[in-house]
Image (cartoon, rainbow over all chains, first blue to last red):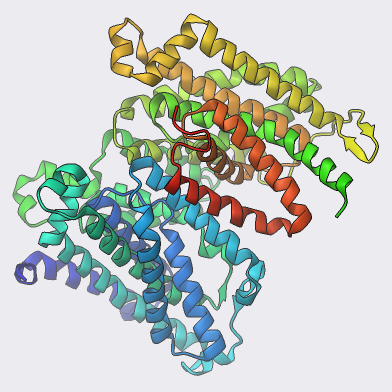
Length: 322
Length: 285
């Protein structure tokens, strides 16, 4: 495990950990709410980056795992009073299992066909949960407040959810880093560049891709369970919101496709920018137009994203900045 | 279950299916020619709706307005192609997906500023036709006729004119078409324009049938994906047939089950077809 000796691995984790402790130190609830969302988006973007950035498979409907994890976790907490950490873990494992089963056939598709299939899967699950009355149907499920009593009230539960999200983001980024620097990760990147050539070199693409898809489903699912635990309400619309997974793709592109720190930077920049545009009275109406325009500029002129650009410009950093 | 109800809803579904087919043809044409999945398809449909709405508010008959929509669609498509697609036409699919998605964001944003997201509808009265228990709304009949005329015109254009043949040549093999002296840049731009135009015409027709909002495009866009995959990506005839299948499915299944279950089946079928018959129901071309 040479990666564990790499200083940059620890620098990222310490910086990220320090960054996430900001709202705890300052004691600002508003900042904590903002940060909670940013951390969640980092998890989503980093997970998508594992399957998309390293392996080259554009998982457009990746938000499906966020929703599935959310639903599994929520159901366990609401019906069986399972502790939320355990429920989130079970949600993650359940979604990974579903990803494993879906992944085996779907990952045979390439390029645009795969992207379309993931959209279809997300929409199918959303339509299913809208109709499935056992899990609340179209109105969804909500906690009675007794659920939060076990955690010392809603306020404490919010605090707890934040800590859980911080731990999860660290685990996600560490996993992303370890995958990228491992032999397994090299195999994934070989698949991304040329699947047939990778096969000739002894990489088993089918197995590599399914494992990667399963891993990348786990983190958004746990994040979903934590998010909806804090939310106290889960509905099919917000749980399987296609728009959100496209936004996460945008974050990956913004920060740098296939880099470890790219999705982190992308999530911060995108979310800060959106917050700024929405709160500014003259720009709030035009925020979609401006965000779309910026995305277009990135896609057309800065394909490598922020981190990729820095790597290109400062060769000395290439050895360290992942 | 009564037979008359079945016939009535079949006719309804068939007619709606033609309009859906026209809508999906725009998406499939663009994919067939340049292998780009146009995520701006939904907003284009919505643009067609609001173009008709604005014109009817100005006192122009919606069906005459469609002629203007044709021009507007062509121009919009060509502009969008040169602004957002041309530079990344040979890039991996993620890039073109995101480029067209950025167009989606900008258009939806601009339309929201102009029209807000409240529901709109056209005030359009046409005589309806009755035969026994079956009533056919006049607006639907006209919409189907327009859809059929546009389809025939599209085929005549693609198979009978020099430009249309160039489009098919570029779709088949861009490199070879260029060697034959075809200016592929203009052909690609024109194809994107035609695809956009088809989306906008279908939007205009849908506006005469249903109420709509700026956000109606998202649902119609995913519906177009389903139809296109059903008929085979890049195959316009397939899109038309796929549209009719979906139209029939949506109207007939509602007799047996609640409407809200229909999308579940649609998307499951969608994924299954991608997996087992990626060339669509019609098979490889």
